[in-house]
Length: 289
Image (cartoon, rainbow, N blue to C red; front, side, top):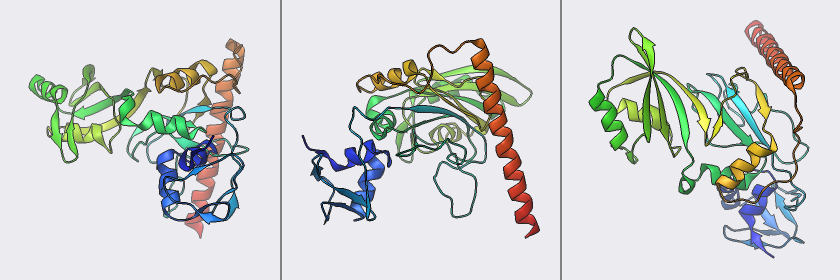
């Protein structure tokens, strides 16, 4: 059976379907030697090239869907490469034998917290698509008191430059002095939407952190800059959430005990420390040159 070209490229781990549509439109994809166009369908026996390089497309039976949870620190960009040489969220991720990690949504440079990655382009595409309305929860620290009438407006909806928006829930979580914490929930991922909603009411956000995606919560043991692969039950929760068939294989042991968990957490912390040492060394070298 033929499949849409962008879906096949996404399954090969080259990016989300949306990203692959842009790649196809740029004219660098060919099928059996002919430049492909958006909307083309391909058969399993056809040869696909991107920038002249043959793409190996695993069958749906071959590919093992994997998901990473990453604790993004402030100051990292959600892009593969930055022309200015700044740190990106992809710098610390483990290498894949084939395909590549795809970020499920984005967090801006001044936002920290949970970011999911997967090697399955179709899963990434569906989790990001607004039609599936996957909940995202953020911890927000704002400056100053917020009137109850303001919170009501944010729940009912306000008009932003790209259309109406609202929080599904807003819960106060305490605070001291002029700093107050709230947890907010929405089910879409527009650019800087959480900040823009607060700013529409002239409320200044001083800290923003994603703590939940769907029902997957940020692991409290995961240090900033650390990643942990999700077990099969979490992978299949996400797949079921967006109407995909269950995965049967996993790289994560289902029999992880307390000692194994401690070893894994210690390994993550060692990896984070090594990365920080390497970053510091690179920074010193840059300053000296």
